[in-house]
Image 1: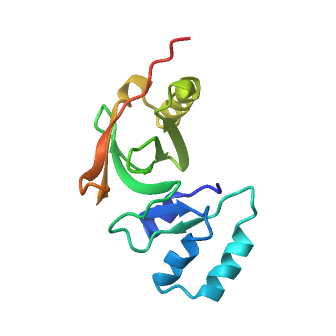
Image 2: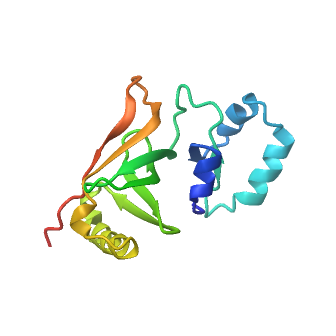
Image 3: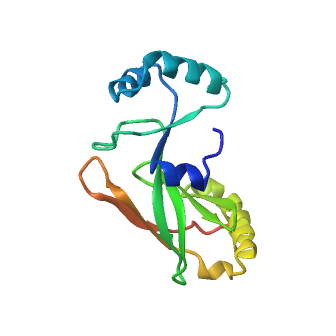
Length: 160
């Protein structure tokens, strides 16, 4: 997917990747002109790169393959960042800092990538890697069970 920047999340707090033709019907139901939508999707959706669009009616959150939800993230040391989580479960957490984006995953198999990203972020913000995680994230939105989308995001330890 083409990268979503902090400016995207300042404009709209929730974004979705476009995957299914049926999504068009819901977007049109929001009041979006169907001809304009078709032309924009044709322009932006190349087939190998899923374009993103803002979710205009977030209650309830629509079921999507990937939703990116703006979050306020507080590091272990108390520093606050803007970022986003992927889906209600926060499978992936991204942090915007110093003009860059740092992406972390809960997946055990990605611990090497998390380690590299953590070192890159620590260097970029002039901090110790140990001061960053676990982080607390919170959003303005509710999940499918009407609970706040918020929690603690820890990194798995690299056992290799």
